[in-house]
Image (cartoon, helix red, strand yellow):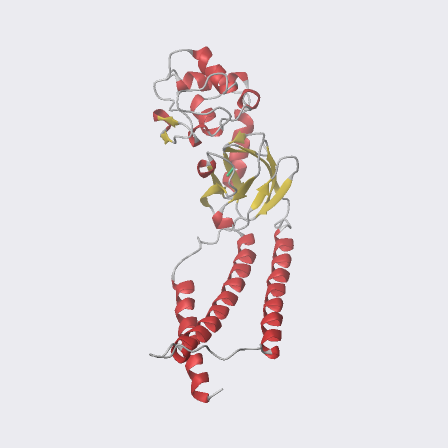
Length: 325
Ligand code: CUA
């Protein structure tokens, strides 16, 4: 190959590399790191990204050079010379990708193994239940809530269960995702690095309300968390509040309800319900008994009748009828 050709290719490759690297580096693609586990996930992400940028530069160089050098000339409609392959090139484009893919695989395996280990002493444990289309978190003090609360600086081990189909637990700031599979228990370790409120997202297409299957995780300082745990223990046994039941059961994920500020439209609006406590109670416990016009059966979970206590159901019905807070 002539020296000029090589220089042209190098130049095109360098331009492609710098432009792509700039897009990768100067646009903030990822949310701020929120957990120790995110560090390894980001390492793997950037390893794969840099490999992609390098491969793109090589491909752009060869294609760009070919455009310039081999483009069709006016009045020349002859075929190009027959090509019989190039053994050296073929070995290179087999061996190099093989090595790169193996490298990504090894790094991923090491990161995932490390991320499975709880850090920072006695791990906090939370049981997570996913169902169409809500998350429920059972905390160590017995408080079951639609919002996850965990302490900063030490690991929380989530054990994940599904009541129906496959969901996937994901907090972007924490990096790692974990599928929630019916019939088996999966596990995810989170070690938050900073306090704050972050979104919990279902990242497995799980049905009509998938995009609304969202919640929050609140990362508290160790003292705040200890105080909240005690508070929760004391509150167990006192009268439930309708608004809290509404929030914890995740009703707002699918239903519009003015007093709760929810605007979702997966299920019918709960504003202006008929003044019939028995009907509303039945509709919560046996959602398919009576279907509102324009909606389908089989969308709302049939588990609320068991999941909520009789007192919680009463409080929820009263709240929906505007009879309590
Ligand atoms: Cu649950 Cu998507």
